[in-house]
Length: 257
Image (spheres, rainbow, N blue to C red):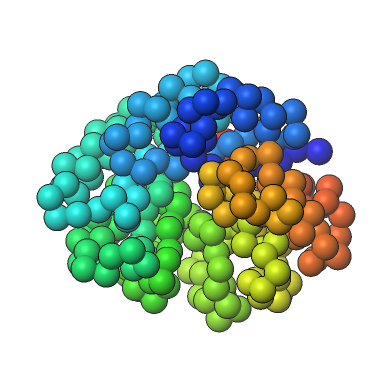
């Protein structure tokens, strides 16, 4: 039984002491592919080095995270994304989007950076991996503005309600990324996901963040995707093997890996 972790930051500093061990544990647990969203130019080489060390298991994306967007740097950072995409090394444009949890003052420049990267994704025929935090309406309005048959992607770390899930599905060619929040006792995400067709769901860990139950309170790792899969199987009243099958099919369809 194999799994694909569609969103993991294993190149982050939290793994500097034992990165190889963490990757090997994930592989030994059945996580055969780990997709790595970028954050900014500061992380590009770290991410690419990890992919070079594990070419059959780790796959890079290129993008500017909304929390790293500011007026002083965003044009330079977008140029970095643009140049890197020309190398054809990347499976997606991400992690991009809008985050209004930490800093609402950068909303307008976040919108510009987000729109620019959506256009780059369309130009390069790549999917987008979208970060949404306290910004669902702002984010989906921009996606809808640029949406056409040449745009596809995933709303990563989905924590919304059924109305928001159906808005994502209504875009066509978009998926819903399910992570550790699904296992949280009071998240109510289980009630939403129960009503979403399996063909729209992807598994992810967002390591080192959002560690699933029963490991909450420690660093998240890609191997913990098993706990998310178990919870999804429970909610859907199906086998974990079936979860593996359809989430892998969905990931391969979106990312062409």
